Every structure is written in C-alpha cells, then in structure tokens.
Length: 104
Image (cartoon, rainbow, N blue to C red):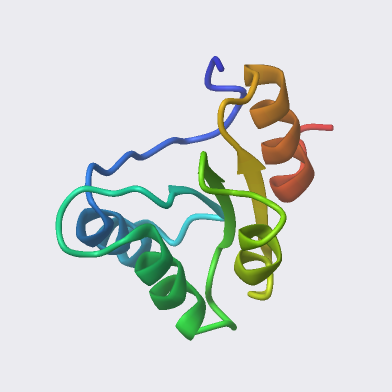
C-alpha cells in the first residue's frame, strides 16, 4: 500500500514495537501474533492494552486468527482481527475503517 497519507514505523520484535509505541504514540498498530524474540504477539497486545486510555487501536493480522481466537483477541477495546493470507485491499480497508481517512 503506498503511504496513503499515513506515517509508518516498523519493528522486527515485540520489544522494539513497544518502544516505538511509547515514542510515537500511533493511532493504529498492525500486529502479527507470530513474533521473533521473547514477547509473543499476544503478550505485546496485552501490554499495549494495559493502559486503555492511551492505547492505540490494534489490527491483529495472523494465520492464527480463527473463530476461536478472534473473539478472545477482540475482547480488548479497539482491537480488530484480519486473517492471513489477506488481500492488500482488505488490509487497506481495515486501516481506513480503524483510523479513518486523513483527508476525507
């Protein structure tokens, strides 16, 4: 997806992502459940949602999203899921829905 008017930061690990969230205060985090290193995607999601007042919206993208896991993930406020594989149009639509169009 071309920038679409969004400023994008990326992280390779959950720890790095949490650091970016603390620094940049994003409106939306796109999070995979399968992450390298010590923190799993579920653990990162829990940490993001701990401070519910200031937490960004989270779009969880994963092959692990199914009828059982989606409701568990979406129990958090402002969390939606998107099952892999997905089409770029589906991702773009989810981002627009969650964040809103910048200029209409």
